[in-house]
Image (cartoon, rainbow, N blue to C red; front, side):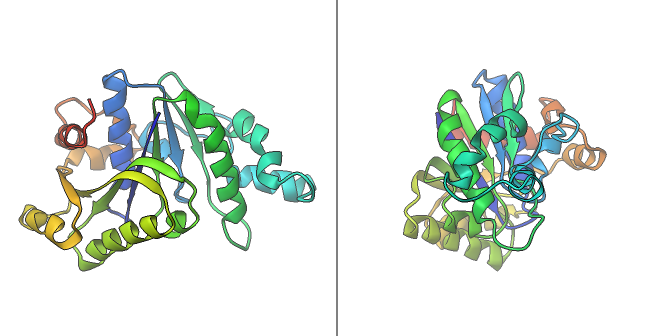
Length: 254
């Protein structure tokens, strides 16, 4: 089992990237996969043609609200993440032919994401042993790194856009991952579809990290997202998909 985390500033295309990686692994026969949507915007399901609500599944945040607020469950005694674990498996995990998916969901109440994060971390520790790959779509910012929801990953891939803030995000993300002692093998940088080719040579010089290439612009991706169509249905000739296949090969995947 290998874990790949996609991260970056908002709007860089990290969710589309995870969807296209999913397509790549499915077509290579590298499954089953576990997709984990840690972004409160909860866009990964739609990107792969799945609506958790329509499937009768709930986010981890929704299950916590039901268990500890609406149903009066206690947080005393058995730790809450352990208490809710079975509900996550039964009510929060969508099980499909090639991939399963779970989402942390938006925070509906005041306070931090501590309890949903802890519940997700515990579920991942129990679930991931059965999958070929675990693909994590993380939120913008650094909180998920600080909270160390995943303590061991193979590859962290930061999607960069053409801005100083994005370059700074990469450097800060790498520093935080090291400081909180996330055990990772590789930290890669990938250019989002807006990233200019003229900047590609600067990536490794400014970040000291390996640059895998740029996701090609593809109008089909925009159209699919606008219409709510699954990116898994993109044609093989899709420029974006072709570029992601090359990026994955450079990262050492079959």
